[in-house]
Each structure stands twice: as structure tokens, then as C-alpha cells.
Image (cartoon, rainbow, N blue to C red):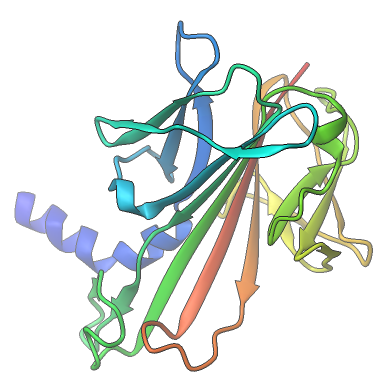
Length: 227
């Protein structure tokens, strides 16, 4: 049984790696403490080397790096005064061999591979609703709610790539759920529920003559609370 499970994991490794996301959750009974989560249907531990950045934005719009404490396979940090947290995660390079098996190797490490993909994950957590929540913060990719969310009421979300609105981007609950596409103004609607919400988006990033991979997938997870 264990061998079968390992085989299935290897076979679908890259597709699962692409489907995974990163997001922020508060630490239970520890006000102002947060943990970076990684996973798809279930959360998983991850090597510290894959977490590339955790940046905190204060009420004045100033960004600074979080002081991260890595324990039990997850990143923990304090952000008692932050308005927004931004996360960048690089899930390595996954190559598909001619046999159909996926391995975590670059194109150079597995030259026989039929494709090699680099899954990049971004997370944005709105911790406090203030003027910063509805602004752009000069990120390569960003989802920006256009107003404070109200449970059960459609919310306009602006999608930017390098500061510009983008049409045709999928926005929804996740890869396995229904989604809306952004319009010509880069806006897609999302209807939040009461409590904690996750808003997923997927982007295409062109790759030209990269020695390590042939494709790059970019997924984004915006999180916030709604009443």
C-alpha cells in the first residue's frame, strides 16, 4: 500500500505542485501571530528555502520584511500592527519524464523531460481594513478589493499585473471551483461569505530560453474576513 501511495504521489506531483497555494492564517489563541500555510485540499509542510518573502505593510503604506520563525515545517511571525501581509513562494521546478512520471528536477538535471514547470505562488492577506486595503502596492501581481467586503454581496476585485489591469484572468474559490473572468477593466466579481475568505487567481507567465524550465505557472491567493 505504501509503495502504491508513493507511486501515485510521484505520478501526479507536478499537477499537485501547480494546484497548491500559499495563504496566511492566524495562530489560535495568539493575537497578532500568523502562520504561512501551503497546500491544496490539505495543508503540507514545506522547506524554508521555498518561502522567498514575507513582507508587511503598515497603515502608512510602508513595507518591511517580517521576522520569520520556521518551526514544524511552517513559517510563523508576528504582525500586530500590519495592515496587509504579502507572501512569495517558489515551489521549485517539476519535470515530466517520457514515462509520464514527474520529478522535482530542472530541465538541465533531467534533459530527457518533455516539459519542466516552475510553479510560483503569491499570497496577500488583508489583516485590517483601512485605506491601504483598496490601493495598489507596486507588486508584480496583485488582487485589490474595490470596497470593504460584506457577506453575501458581490465584491469587485481589481487584478493587476505589473501595475496594469488585465482582462481574462480567472478569479474564484480555487482551481477546482467555478470562476469569473476579469473584464476589460481588470475587474471580476467575487461573493464573500461571512468569516474567512480565500480568493484565488491564475496567471500565465511567458518563458523564453530559460535553461531550467519550459513553463511557469503563477497562482495567487487573497484572504480576508467579511461580516
